[in-house]
Length: 492
Image 1 (spheres, rainbow, N blue to C red):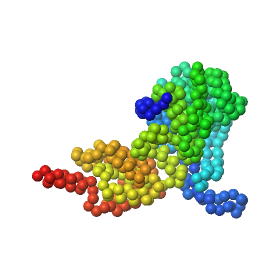
Image 2: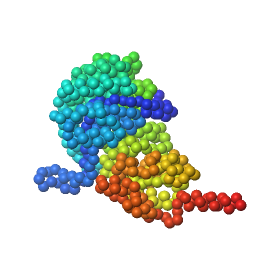
Image 3: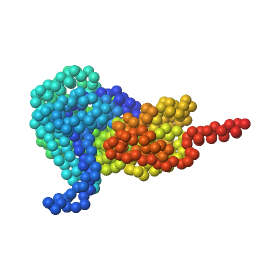
Image 4: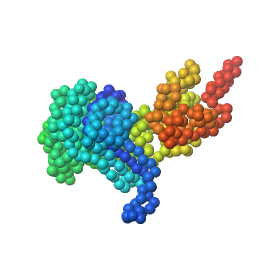
């Protein structure tokens, strides 16, 4: 049985797993607005758009989940030679991924799904796509890419959204190559027949997809077991993992009895992309050394978290430990850059403004507290970036910091006004600001605006820079001097 100790032991192994994701890349656009009137042209609501942004769906969301959990990823796909395709490449680059395996077809549009949300509900979705199979030329490019780079990967995920990437011929060749080179292959399947996936290792269909592919009405546990075992035998698979929504996950393996895992979800807001989270966490867990049943437990736990978020979302190791095993909430606030980028995307989807401030925060004092409280009042989500120990020494001298970076991060995480803490190694947060693009940048009023690092970046994309008044004569340096002088006097 999966437990906290085993998870904490296995999570560091995730960073050693490099996974190739092949599949349909989708550009997800979110338009967030308010409804206050009915159109005079037709009996429909008028949505006044307040915020909009794009993120990756389909195979891109699988990759984002793998990164969020600490894995290494390469993506291979075919997109259009259009502005939506350029946006997909930008989003992949933002995640730190190479785009060398992405091929641009001039006669094929990039799939884009636009969702209009109002009052925390999706009111409309607009799809721009083609489902025609890709031309043979592009299939050969995918095979050539896989052949050249096969030695680098611990496993392969195929994310099939039926947008035309996976022809039967291409699937057969990919599965054959993976088998020949002993690379386990995991598939999120689609379609009325799963015969095209024959010979793969593992598939992760949902309940509706299983019913469609097997022709079995899944009303009872006996019918679900019959369908799962049918897929296992007819497709010569090692495992079938059936996601069942509020009923959890069922696992079927050769020579083992079926396993049913009850859902771990506490709240369900949006199931978009939950299957992406399942296959990402299942694959990482299995490749890192978990038995398939325990990897399925991990996937079930991860899915329970992600359905409580709005839109296509990801999960982190800290979220899983905190959610499933009551790990310290302080650790939840401490994020890596990829984790924080995913968190910000989720908050923006909910119409929330992010505020960013930075500093050493060595020996937290009342001046720091007031600055952070005022910063939080300027938006919805407060991100505090702190210099790591090496950069504090460069900035403040060899005797600093007084507290380690982890101690400083945990102290800041204990404050209710702080939502996220990130540690950065550079002397300035310029690169961090470029990556996160906060709506508001905050510094103390001891700076002039033209002295604030990142001001031009933030104002360049329409954000604002705010200066907050500080407590007079209060600083860490003064506090340290006072402590030293006091002990010197007492020592005399």
